[in-house]
Image 1 (cartoon, helix red, strand yellow):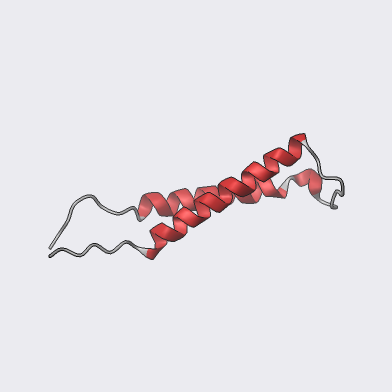
Image 2 (cartoon, helix red, strand yellow):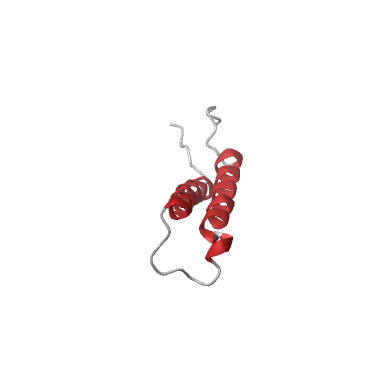
Length: 73
């Protein structure tokens, strides 16, 4: 019987990737439809920056810790 254990970092990478895509999407949406109440540093578009950072980290973890296709003893 073979057991296959996925790394927790792969799952964390998936979560970072999903959250980053959602935050980046929100930031892009706010470019075209600005909110009614604007905060002080809105001109820097932090949602786009932080979303992109999360997507990058998520991709790194997903690629680096992806489950292997080979089964070893």
